[in-house]
Length: 470
Ligand code: AMP
Ligand code: ZN
Image (tube, rainbow, N blue to C red; front, side, top):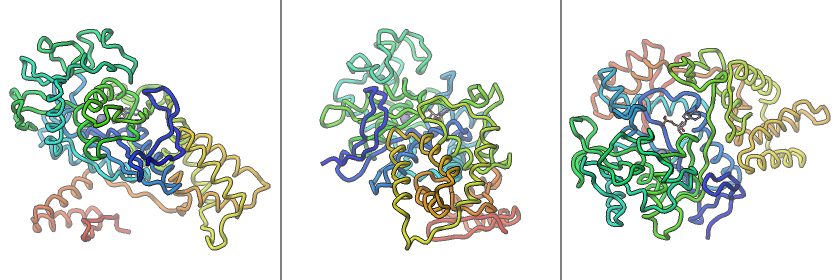
């Protein structure tokens, strides 16, 4: 029996608010498209990654279990000019090993998530370690006659054989003009212009290639999400999350690859949640415009990273959001003021008053209504101003809501956030590798370098832990 959750999310496919269900009767299975790890995630990416956390917190607040998977794209995502894999391109540019680049930015991604209090997913499968899964998935599609190998060696999906192709994004197959730059540039070898490659021949490429029954090559981007989501979430995805730009072609293609292989012949994904994009000071963030902002920039400007989380919560995820330094500054100020007033922990033995419990419940209901976080924050602002409510009630409300908002309301105002430079993170990463390879001489040398940089490392059974020396 599926479990109902009371959480409603606007579903891109049906264009309706749907209740999210735990279809296996015990938990809600969630998949979120993860980062392509060739560069730092910018704060726009982080806005999208926060969505998983908001869903997890909303459900856990009512003790509903979740199983969350977020992939790490370390192969297969082609650059905008469709010439080269993004990670290999970066490897070429910097003369580094592509996997070293991927691991460095994967580690930084986890570091950014932790700074924003984003709950950890249960599984972070890497594309490069899931090639067999992709082959197994492709084999099923091959048996169903849905893929074919073109004369150019690419293995394509026959988009015309998936009748509801385009339903997610509103695109019609016939309208997708040949040459439209939404996929790799293979021409001539496809049966139909909208077909896309699941496997590409290695050609002259030497790195990041694998053997397969379709020849030596590498995967396309879309197949990884179909293969990983269905494998790790055991055949069904209750909620699929990603940024709006992924709706087409990434998710459209994923849906076409996933639906045909599931047992009941229905939808592999029950609800598609898409987050709108973040702009910075009125413009799309881009390297050429010079306005790509990282979390590190926010911290270096003297702001608490959770001020950024606060800004995200103040805006509805389905609206395009325009962030500015002024809004981060304002959020930082409110957050500090609230901690100053309400950080003192309440004696839980007493229990919150009836009023406080109702207030907390009302805020949670806003989250349940398609993550209406701005509405919940407005309630908190009004609470602060309301002189008829006791400070005791206010404190217990802030304390009770912390698991939902994740803004560290109970943190001491004076506490500082630790930020590590990329040099320091590199050393930490290298030491992790040295330890895994049992190269203790190298691991000691790196410990010493970290020590000189003012970072203390402790080796625990679960791995190394580090902090800046006081
Ligand atoms: P990428 O690492 O480029 O694959 O992107 C990771 C995630 O960030 C995807 O879900 C994108 O849709 C999302 N994304 C990219 N740019 C923005 C932006 N400006 N605002 C919000 N999300 C974004
Ligand atoms: Zn994906």
